[in-house]
Length: 73
Image 1 (cartoon, rainbow, N blue to C red):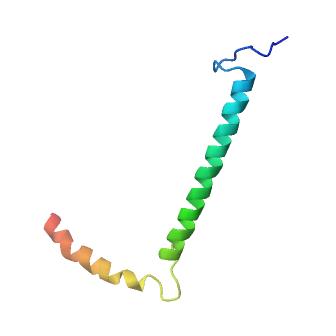
Image 2: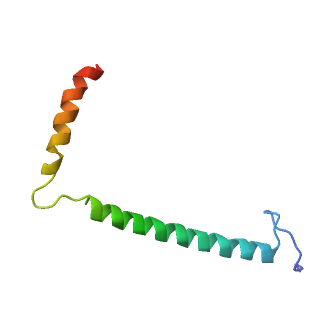
Image 3: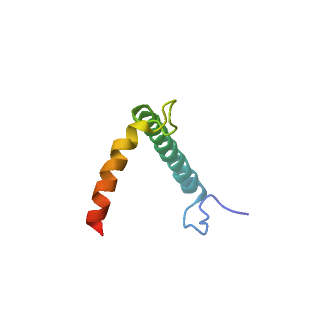
């Protein structure tokens, strides 16, 4: 049978592996929470799906890019 100090392929004991797993999950949950908040804030700032007027506000950007493209070639 396995003793409490048995080392696995990762080099950690069962207790160390469980402790690492709990820290990993806490970090992953924090990362996902920050990512969700960032995506919500980005959505409020500039929605990814256009509204009823579409992407009309981006026409000036298209004109600017069209003016600079000949300079790049």
